[in-house]
Image (cartoon, rainbow, N blue to C red; front, side, top):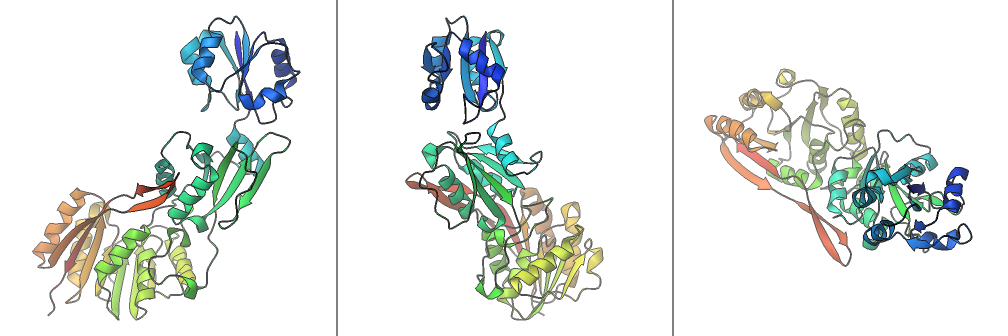
Length: 409
C-alpha cells in the first residue's frame, strides 16, 4: 500500500504517533520540498519530492510500499485525485489531516458550516470578483502566491467596493509552532515576512458609519450600505445606481416613489442629490423598513415614508408621483406598471431596470399604449483590479433600462 498522509505546517512533528510510525517504517517517502529539512532524522528511506505530481507517479509506479505526505486532506484540492488517476485506488490508503479551512475557522473560533470557499490556484481571479458580488457571510480564499496571494485578494475586495463590508484575516503556517493569524486593516501594510503558505478569510461585518458629509455626493461604495444578513448582495450595484439616478432626471422638488426599494440605496442617494424631494420607499420584505431607515440615518437623509407592503395595493395612500423607480414586481409587473402610470403626474418619468429581454417585451408595450415617450438602453460595467503587472476587468451583470416620459399637460 501507498499511505497518503495529510499534514499541517508543523509536520512531521505534529503528526499523530501512529502516522509517525508509518513514516519511520516506510521504505520510500515522498513529500513537498519545504518539508525535506524537517524530515531529516525521521527515516533512513529514500526521500523524493512530491511537488511535481506527474514525475512522482512515475517514481511510485514500481514501489511496493511508500508514504506520501500531503497538505491537509489529500482529497480536497490536494494530490489525492492525481494519485488515484495515476496509481489506481486499490493501491492507496488516505489519512486526512484537518484541512486549512478547518484550522483557519478554529483559530477564529467561528462556526463554518455556512462558510463559502474559493481557490485561486491557477485560476482567473475573476471568480473571486463574481463571488464577492453575492456578498457571502464568510468566505475563505485559498490564495495563489505566484499571482499575489493576499495582496491580490485585497485588491479585488477594494475594486468591488467592499472593503468596509468585510474583515480580512490573514492565516499563515497553520499548524506550525510559528503560525500567525491576524486581522489586516484596509490600509495596513502586508507583513514583510509574509509566508507563501497562507490563506485569507473574509468575514462580513457591518460597515462603520461615516459622517454623512464625508460621503460622496453620488456613487457610494456598495459596502457602505447595511444589508439583510440572510440575503446579502441583493442591491443595485454602484455603476447601475449612478445610471438610474441620471435616467430619473431628478427635479428639485416633487414626489419620488422607490418601489422594490431593497436596502433603499437608489432612493436614499436621490435624496442626497435632491434634498427637496419627497421620497416614498416601498419594499415587501419583512424587516426592510428598519433597514432602510438605518441606511437613511447613515446617509444623513430623511424619507417621507418607508413602507413594508406589496404593490400596487400599498400605493393607495401615497401622494401622486413625479418620478418612479420600479425595482420589483415579478409576475405582477404589468399590473404594477399600469397602476403607476394611472397615478403618474404630467411630465413625470418612470425608470425600470430589468434583467431579462422577456421583461422588456412585457413592459415596453404598456408604456407605449399609455402614450409615454419610451427609451431603452443596455448597460454593462466592468471593474478593474490589479493582476500581476497589469489590470483585469471583471464584468458585472448586464442591465436593461426601460424608461418612459409622460407628456406635460
